[in-house]
Length: 150
Image 1 (cartoon, rainbow, N blue to C red):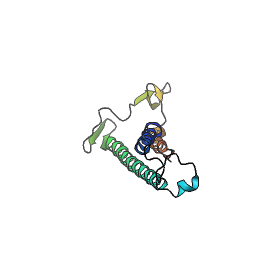
Image 2 (cartoon, rainbow, N blue to C red; image 1 turned 45 degrees about the vertical axis):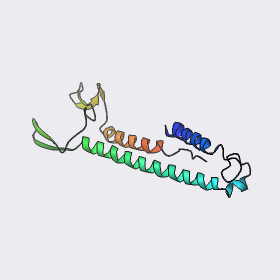
Image 3 (tube, one colour; image 1 turned 90 degrees about the vertical axis):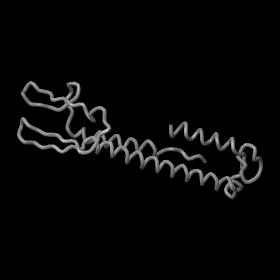
Image 4 (cartoon, rainbow, N blue to C red; image 1 turned 135 degrees about the vertical axis):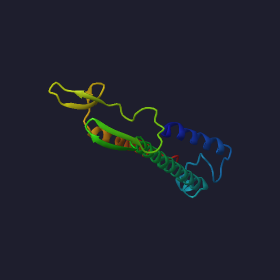
């Protein structure tokens, strides 16, 4: 959305708003770089780029905060282990989750050892830490290469 629809919508809005201006400080058909560099259109485009950056920064910060709150809320338990057969989990606060954050199974191997996995496939424990971090990094990367309007 950000790299296609948002940028296209901004371009179309700018063209429609300035299409009837013609020659002058907001001329969209200016071909001389020197004239454009001193025009009000350049200053206007710079302001739009700053507004886009500020909007993206605010939305990204809000989304990252929401994501971290979601993860922290999903794992907010107090665990008391009395013995191997008695474990007490107490939720700390309210959760908006309808389903667990991870679907895990205990997989009994032929040699008697137990693995943690999903759908019968063992998953290394480190992946449960890496996966939410990888999603976080992917979300940040998605807003890093958005072209500017100018």
